[in-house]
Length: 219
Length: 219
Image (cartoon, rainbow over all chains, first blue to last red; front, side, top):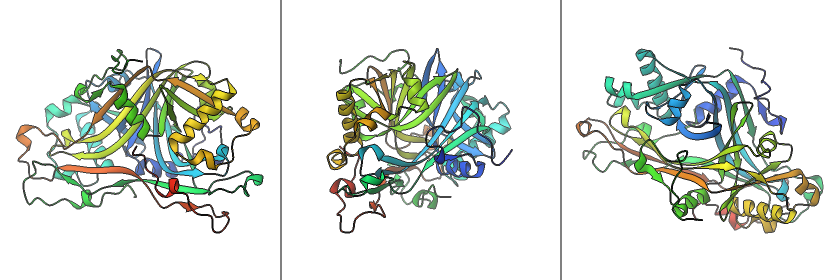
């Protein structure tokens, strides 16, 4: 796939075009720091936006869920989807209300998701998804059995039509506002993991694994 | 408006119905802790999902942006929208891969957004939006002027058709898996504010306001 893909009319950033990112490697960095997406799809003319976990493996995105899920059953019809990942980095306080903003990195991928049919690819995709969200966990868990695999739908969305939008840094005020007497700057925001909480039924003495104690999305 | 609204066929939680929340007060609590939504709308048969800040005031949600924004210009046509807010609370590690999950609180509101036309209501809505995201900031900023107000589109979405889905607490494993020798529990996740960063152009000696130093979404 081309590294720096020209956007389509549907993915070109119109507002604040200086915030546009079309570079595949930069987009993958955002996709790899995130693990929750918002999936948009249409049912009877109504758009729905549903949050769900995801994984990236190569040039594909994977989402999964119950084979009975309304969202996945709809996606499985081959309908157009919008897959959006947003990382919120801060609140930007300008002097003027008008120039207040957010620091963020967001990715939009458009396309059609297809169900992964081959049982071997399904297992590979589920492992990729698990590795994306919590590296190291797959190997230490009870593996999926045939019944569970059958009850799980895995959808693959190729990363073909995409763009990202990124704002970082301090506020930008109008020239005449810089003397306005108020504080200006950024309140940084970060999704921070807390101390892992043992399942109350956990056998005594079982150590908390490193991947849980030192969880981080920074890659 | 009724406090506990029956869901419609479009907002009824089908999967994991025990996670459904239809109580208006409980839904408002989630909406008030969040301030970034994902808005879904359709253009030429393609769903789009765009992140943006929002505010709640009474039984209305407000979003805003440039009058030239593709999203807002589309919403302004009176098309159906889906407004989704997601708060991520943790990663749930079960013994089996199959029972891994997330702790989260998410709200979906369906409806049609309308542009706020009355200049007075527009200013009130913008103040509500600002107060929702950063209480106290409005009064200390340079107020919007007429040109800025004209360049800003404010959309109102009444909170009429909605539902929330909430999962909290420890993993739930299949009975036969509780003896499986692995760690199980929850990695809590929270959006945490960092130390405010001064705008490099800030006049020396200007104190960081309390609302920036002690920023919190807990209400």
